[in-house]
Image (tube, rainbow, N blue to C red; front, side, top):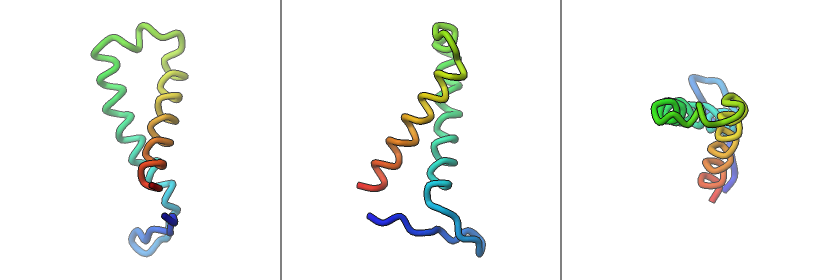
Length: 67
């Protein structure tokens, strides 16, 4: 599949930027779940952990859309 520009209100944006926003919204939900379960208290560096999870979510979403 080719990634084509997306027209948002007359402005062409890269499809990766839209995927990044979608991954960020998924991360909001995952961060809330992780904090309720106490997972963020168990990791050494919570911000680094959440960044790594964001990269995993973003790459997974990109691979699913590209397939």
